[in-house]
Length: 118
Image 1: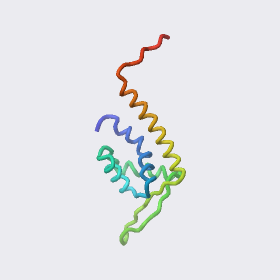
Image 2: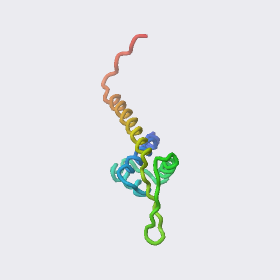
Image 3: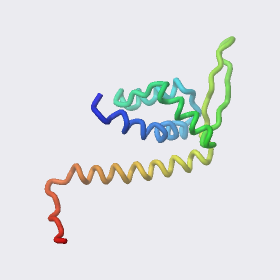
Image 4: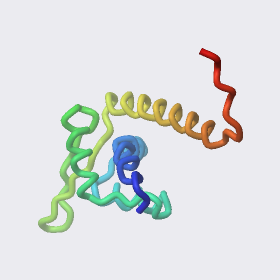
């Protein structure tokens, strides 16, 4: 893994979780698998990274959860995006688009602008 890649990824976990939950209610294992599958392996989020983020989002009221019994004894927790979570997602997407636009401009820069005289 490239140096610094992990911290950049950590800053996007919240946005990715909210984005996927906007599509439908999902449980944790589904979230990690979807992130890996949709990104074609470029983003590999472990459950140990996911759950602290999900718990934080739930505490802030962005998510709610419901428990579903699967089989005879297994309990699965589905996460649901609340309206406040949709608002948070909109803010995160706006920030993301602004920073990626700025990064793209910098990386596409062939020559530096002339320094202004002080």
